[in-house]
Length: 582
Image 1 (cartoon, helix red, strand yellow):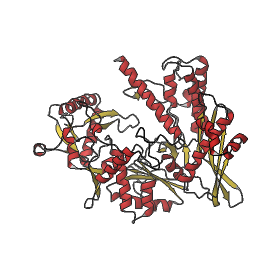
Image 2 (tube, helix red, strand yellow):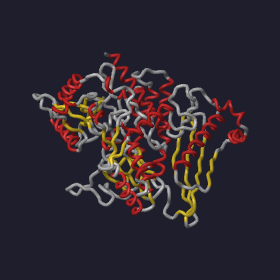
Image 3 (cartoon, one colour):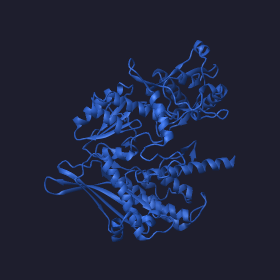
Image 4 (cartoon, helix red, strand yellow):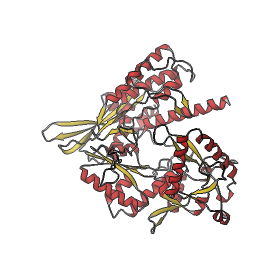
């Protein structure tokens, strides 16, 4: 049992490290060149692997548009005949009883859970099966269990319902029988953030219950049965089924995203701008873009609302630059009866989050909120509050370990690299911990501990930093320049991309677009090699900026300060094989 717990912790730790690395590698990783040996990499000239393309083709073909109800209906991409699914009623019943025991511990949890179930029925996401329907159905049947998951970030919703389509019974789960489609069937996250920064007015929308907006066919409904009795433990459980796509299903992201894309294609004649917003500036259930004026932004928002409604999707709210509260629709501001603004977008009470990036719409600035918490977890939730700057350094634990420091560093999210000096320092310290070859829970040496204490104390300086979101000044003239600088040292290498505008008064205006940094590999490289790596990294960054941004750059300057790199660039391709290997 103990070894199993340790193994689970190790897997969670590896997952955290992987997520952090993926965030740091966004749009700077090298494209795979391994061909077709593993079947997971894209074929040359294609976006997805052959398997992913075939799965996506099935998902597209399964989507059908219902003109009378203006919605999409889908069957699932089965890779196993659903008629072979086992009867897992008893497992679903046992899980229901376990969930009921959990909810009985807290009255607020129980009431919240019941309200969410009633809301699903009210929205026609789920419905109760009658005895006659149960008797008459002769097709496949499968039950999915539902669990109460703690939701500590919300005061109003302490628990939420999660349907577990991955629960295994006799070696089979619902998700194991379904194709999932491409891993990354959505727009480029960095590209969306760059376009969001282009113009004076930012526009952010949130699609309401996106996955639940696509209807299921009858067979899929009966393979999504579940048990519920309203916490009336003396009654036998009723049988319900899901009528819409379930968020926990493997193909759900690809199905719902494709439904939005198909809606945009089907009604693009109504508004090309709304279609472009839905297809190119959407990321899961977020709609993110920027426009020159408020009027232009509201026009596109209203057209997008109308277009998405024809596909069965509804927009929960919109947030614009300069407005304190989100708009319920493009025409009006949504407030509570008390007159206080209702924060309906992702984020905290004072700020919003755009793809995980902090944003203050009132000052139209990008900001960072530090999350530092060393308390132990119970049921996956920290038992104490987050620390603030006044708590340090007294509140720091007396003993730091590799596990503890890594957990805190993995929380830093900086997709645009605006705080590279901080993340680089963290990377250097993490590698120093790794180089000592310490176990996960072995106390760190005094010299390394002192460095981490200084780092955690300095981390709160990030909250004082604010970055202007907009990359175009009001009095800009002509076309902008893209200026990219790269550099390398024995310790690290990286690049920074800037935009430069000419102003009406003859002066120039410059802002940081994005930056990326990497530490040197464990196998020590020479300084010229590090400089060349920086140049390669900057070339990848330049490609992203030119492809994703809508600015027509008048000139692109890629600057390096190493003559060795310049001479290598001017050499022919065959003489760089050794450098390429590094």
